[in-house]
Length: 71
Image 1 (cartoon, rainbow, N blue to C red):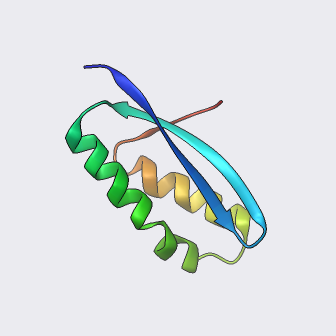
Image 2 (tube, rainbow, N blue to C red):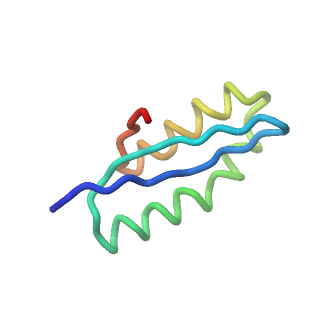
Image 3 (cartoon, rainbow, N blue to C red):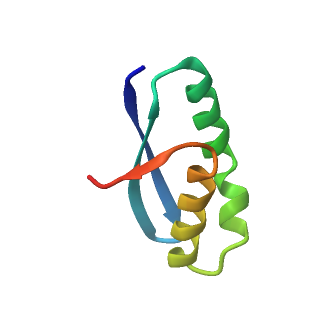
């Protein structure tokens, strides 16, 4: 099975950052990705600044089987 990039744009106040992840290209993975992204507002609500949010978001998405890649 081939890997595919998954991209999310994080926003916290005026701060924005695009993060790239990689995982299998399958319908199950796509469903897991959509769920992980939909849960990000709850992750953000627990953070006090953008640095904390970025770390928490990466942890949240990696815990769901996605590997962060640098672009």
